[in-house]
View: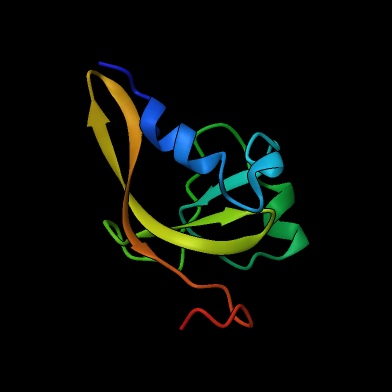
Amino acid sequence: MSSSPTSSSSSEAAADLPFAPMLDVQCHVDFVIGSTRMTVRDCLTLAKHSVVRLAQTAGADFDLRVHGVPVAQGEVAVVDDNATVRITRIVVPSGVGWE
């Protein structure tokens, strides 16, 4: 079975959308598992096997950002020995008016 998120029938339906010419545009996607604040001094002492404490708790959903804009939250899942992402929540960007 294909791992593609779209099927041929959904691809054909997408061709009718007003933004169809943009469907194959490449996007920069980040999966942000956490963040923290560090001093320059602390950054300079980082080495192999250093542990950096994050603000997020273990097991918390992480942010999925497209070009820096949060669009979803998700969790890490394993499928066939591969790390994957399971989307748990869609986030409507502020100012879009989809609320």
